[in-house]
Amino acid sequence: MKGLSLLNELLRFKSLTPKDDGALNYIALELDEFEAFFIEKEGVKNLLLSKKFADIGEHLAFAGHIDVVLPGEGWDTPPFKPTQKGDFLYARGAVDMKSGLAAFITAVQDVKFKGARLSLIITSDEEGEAKFGTLEVLKFMKEKNMLPDYAVVAEPTCESTFGDTVKIGRRGSINAKLTIKGKQGHVAYPEKCINPVHLFASRLAQLANYELVGKDENFEASRIIITDIRGGIELSNVTPNELCIMFNVRHSPKLSLEDLKQYVEKLCEGLEFSLDLKQGSKPFLTDKNSKIATKLFQSVSKITDLSPNLNTKGGTSDARFFAEFGVSVVEFGVKNESMHAINERVSIADFEKLCLVFRDLIENF
Image (cartoon, rainbow, N blue to C red; front, side):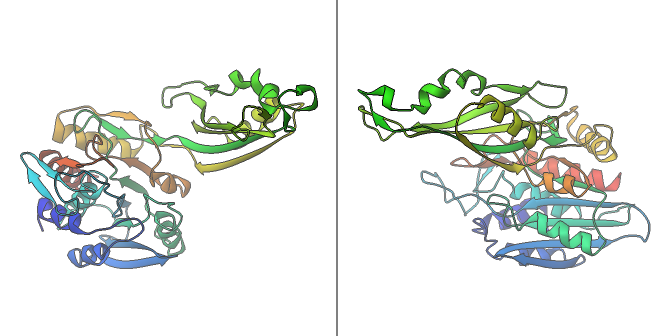
């Protein structure tokens, strides 16, 4: 099936996280020359498609998610009825990331590959908690001794122009909740109270937007970003019993959860407090000179006449799971300007170029 026709079909599936709405079965039927493994856990459906080309050689995988976020209100066209207007195709998931899926599904059909194996990994739980999606497929592949050597996650990476950005890593994410204990009381008798806001006020500057690790050639600075502060019972004559501060740190591999824990605990010395830290995702970095980064750079340059910037900007993606399993991974896809937005749309020309980039990567790997 031609790429654009396939994309139109995928966009019709109402695949709201963690449902695939039958899309994975449809994809498996389209690629019937690939061996299909359906991996389901806790209501999350995943599809692994794999095809052997030789006994010896390298294993290249493409990965992505069929699930999409809720469309929201205010669309000019039905969000699950793809509509072409001018040079764009409108639908929920057009950018994030059914265009990426359709591109690599198109690229692997009847392709000439000189390696040992090609695989496609598709999940329905990337936009959710991502606990039982790509991670479970990689566990399955490890058990079967078929982990890929290299992987491309087809997330929308480009910023201003198609071909301008390839992701070679991502920052990690740590969520935190710091609670400073006090003693509630009447505001007219502050000497009988222990006001946690007053106790922590002089230290707030060492928390808010504090730079824990500086910027380097691959990652932005690792900073503490406060997301919520609350205390008290919304009365002007009662002091708070405790102060709760929530914050997030997007960080490079140079900062660990333990590093953050030690910093905050030292900052709170002398106070009665509790600290809850959770690692949402771990950072990773793929060498710019790795084979997958080099070959993808060459394919993007060949198709677009651009030299893509190799960076680690943005949030998290399933690429982090590949890195955890020792797979050399990069990300590349269409422009990300309208992902998760009302009237999400993808440039048809950009999508067709993405198909060509992936095809060229496979044939010249």
